[in-house]
Image (cartoon, helix red, strand yellow):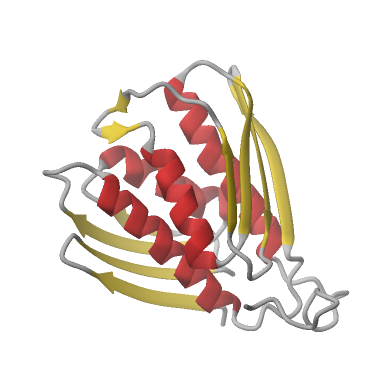
Length: 196
C-alpha cells in the first residue's frame, strides 16, 4: 500500500497527515483556516487521493506557520508513500481553467526540491486566508516532497478563482506523476534513484 503517515509538532503547530495515493478522493480535512481546508480538500477530490489532515496552529498570530507546516507535512507524507519511487510516471502536468482564470502546474518527483511560482496575486484576504500563503503552501510542499514544482498563471483576475485553480491543477499534475505505469521498469531515472 502506498500510504504516508506523518506527524509534525512544533511550538507553533501540530499537523497530522495520512495520505493514500491509491484512493478515491475520500477526505477528512480539519484546519483552523476554512479556506485552506477547502483548498486541501481539492487535492484529495481532484487528485483521487484518500487524505486525512488534522492541523492546529497559532492562527491568532496569522496563518503562515499553519499553512507552511501543512505544506511540508503533506509533502513528507507523499515522499513516504512513494517509497523508492519505482514504477511511477515521475512527471505530471495540468493546465486547467476556472471561469476567467487559467493556471499551469508542472512537477517532477525527482528527489530534488526546486520551486517556481509565477502567480502574481494582490495582497488580500480570502476569508481569513492571506493570498500570499498560497505560495507558502506550495513551497513547503516542494521541500517536504523533494520535488520540482512550477506553478504559472496564464490569465485571470478573480483572487478566489486563481488560488483555487492553482490547487486543482496541482492535484491533477500530482495524480498523473504518482501513477504506477506497468511499462516503467524500476526507477524512472538513468541514475537509478530518485532520492538525494
